[in-house]
Image 1 (cartoon, rainbow, N blue to C red):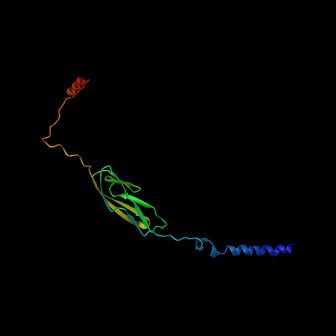
Image 2: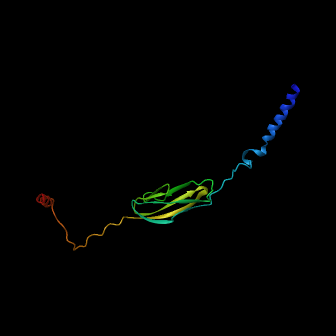
Image 3: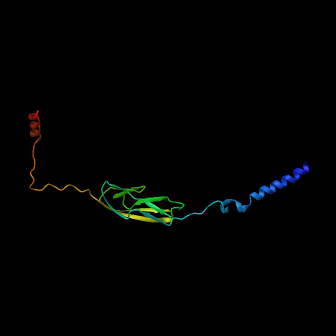
Length: 147
């Protein structure tokens, strides 16, 4: 029996050692895909846009290739007093011009130029338009007579 164990134990160790050969484990293992697919480009759905103060607009970034390893992007406004940007949502703060830039992995960038205008006000009445002038007391007296 002792002789049987002396043969079986070395053979089993040899079998385990063969299974753990260096060419079948770690980053060189052909069964493990360790390729890093680099970002080739990033694009935006617009390259220029005009909007009024207090409006919002959503920029959409597309990272290529579609199977890139790191598809994260970072947004930045050239002038936060004019426009702010968070996760692609651009908010107009004040009149002026600003550029929003998106940066993807491998320093790939794309930009959109924004022009921010003041909201349109209704035109003033013509100078010869009749004006209604009533004091608060005239208005109150009128309301009392109607009751």
